[in-house]
Image 1 (cartoon, rainbow, N blue to C red):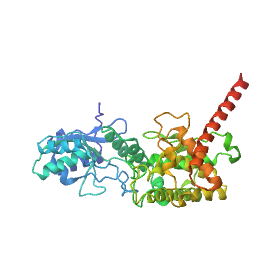
Image 2 (image 1 turned 180 degrees about the vertical axis):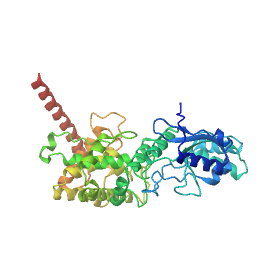
Image 3 (image 1 turned 90 degrees about the vertical axis):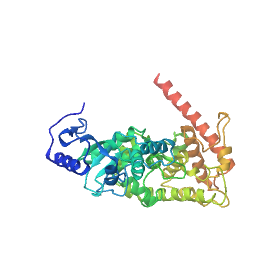
Image 4 (image 1 turned 180 degrees about the horizontal axis):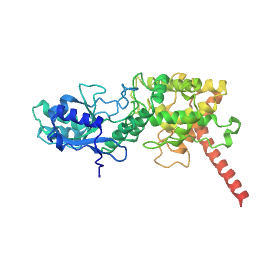
Length: 411
């Protein structure tokens, strides 16, 4: 149960300001100041008229108003969702909503001191009702005097109640840690200037935090491989986890204090951004299958391309050929049609060809393909795809033999 700790001067003053400004249904003696025992965050729960919530509230809430004021903490409103449309109708029929999670603060945007942290769809439904002179009381949870850590926690638990996506969780975590990853992606062209990561990645939209981390992680993983041992090394790229801790990513940042100023890494990001653009432009005047223009952003493609870039970092000749893939003439750089026809005799009947899945086998095959392409610079061809797939399976068989021999020596 909530901890009823004595009120402190700061939150008591904020609570009194809130009561005076919003005139909740509860009188001031009834406004209990509660404490979340886990984080120490102070809050009260009460009921406020919809007109007050709408006129003095806002969903335009930054997680870090001082350092990153242009980047929002809330999800995007899903306007066409049927549940949202029903919510609007219900609000106009005088339904009272509850558990709208807010923060009362005038530290930024003082004209709208009630910052909507959780319940932005309910807020918009209430706005629609108020516009038609329907003004009901609604239940609000009002946080007072949050610090950054508490604000992030409130953002996460608020959105968890509406099935927060892993991408949104990652974005909130990155915003809390600082703007470095976002700034790097904008500099590399993987995000537009002023654009934030997706809160749920959709084809053609902004990339997600997971995708950005995956690109950078595999770039440095590729650097660890001895090119002379490529054929006997497991070169399967990784995909960074989403919706929770990523120890490998945190370790990478801790081990590389010059990560965000690494010129070669930034060049890799810019070259991959150019490949994405070239792949899209190849279909700008056509009506292909929807995934063809976005093929570069398949996570198997992205991770393998970054992996080979890191592996070839000290080989300028082959690295140049790798980067020149984007300059393919007369067809899309990744040759999506040919990829779709690539398969191995061991593939299941429902396998749709290379570039549709993201499992380890798919990622490993793309590593072989990009490594092979960098040898001759002839682009992605049907024969290269066939050889790369077969090379992947030969390598996996060799690795199994090596493991079996090592195990035999132990026994």
